Image (tube, rainbow, N blue to C red; front, side, top):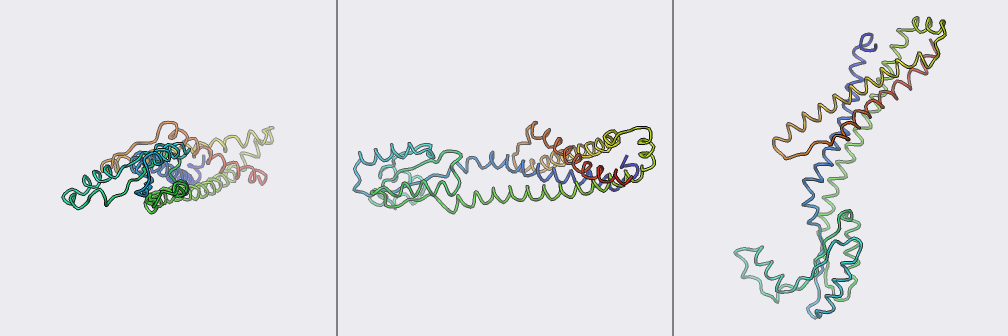
Length: 272
């Protein structure tokens, strides 16, 4: 109905819903692929506690066993001076002869469990490990951890803000479209009321129109996401949204359309 009477506003409604859901969907793609692509990077988040040279083997073993039982810890492993030397020589390549066993201390390497790798939790675990008397220093790459989560938070916030903004504009445009349609059909609605049509009966086609507009916007958003995925996927290996997420996005488009129609049709029917 609105496309025949107000094609520009009808098209704008579909496009704004599409851009709204596209923003949400793009955020979903970023979040999904961030987890896929940066999962290995996140696994590199570990804490290394360097211990005093005078620490005996039994004390170190007891500490490792205790740290491994922390709820945030996936595993804790002791690294002897010889093992540290071997690792350093392997990493340094041609400069491997620079190091000797006396140069590198023994340490405890702690891998943080998934779900506990945010900066605050990692720092809390590091601070707890630092309370052991024989621990000289604790390092975990605080700057790296914070930057990793800053990227995630910025991507999340941007997607949500853009999605909400486009959704709000879409609701306003749909409301304006429905208003024009209601006013254009004022005479027809008056006749329907004269023959006994209830407000619910009169309102129904407008609500269905809003839902249809939202679903069209959802389908367009899904198409835009797929095109973006296809283009970027040529250069970066990506995974697409799972089917429940895609269907949920289209359904959310229908909900936006319904809300826009419901907000407008009830108010303007009273004036007809």
